[in-house]
Length: 263
Image 1 (cartoon, helix red, strand yellow):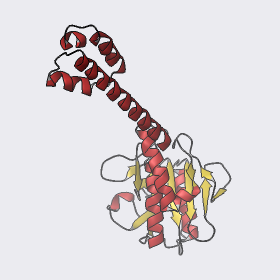
Image 2 (cartoon, rainbow, N blue to C red):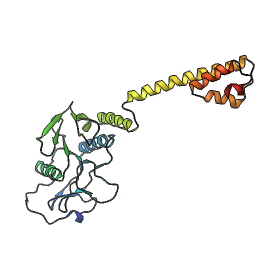
Image 3 (cartoon, rainbow, N blue to C red):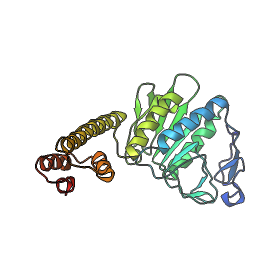
Image 4 (cartoon, one colour):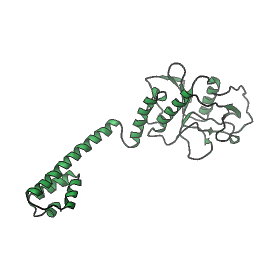
């Protein structure tokens, strides 16, 4: 929430006069007091932050970071993506994507002023998630008409996020966690949980096949009366190279010793 201001001229305050932790933003030199978020807003804020932060193409994101595109302006989106450094102080310019949550008591005029300040600072996409009334997200982009996305639809930010974001993921913790899991898997080179499962099943099948061939090889040695040392037995059982096991089995049929078969 923020206190309404009506001044249109340049105010006297500068971003460098504010310290980290001060509960104020600035718009053209005018201070705006920012109250703590309520319970509902804080939970949604965390969910939305996790969703965008874990996207495979995102290199930096933060909750409530201050950006100062010019000395008299300091804006702190609820969630920001891009243009953040791992250092103290205010960010320069503006985030690529900003996410704001609007709950009961939000000063609408001040929210629109904040949106305008961010767009003027070259934020490319602003999402405003409305926590009051029907579930919806307003999409603001420079030079584009306002769009409203509703439950069941997907938000997109080409060039910023790799994946679409379901509207519901910005409101529901359970849906957010599903998207976070997908994003984290992509960061490890998997496109989906199904791919992980399929790879695990393939590895399990190969593991079983290798064990069967290793047991067969040891059985051939036993049938031919060839003595197998513990070291040789351990090497055979640890081998997962199916082609190597096939070669050893073929050699074991005629080799004079285990060492010769495994050479």
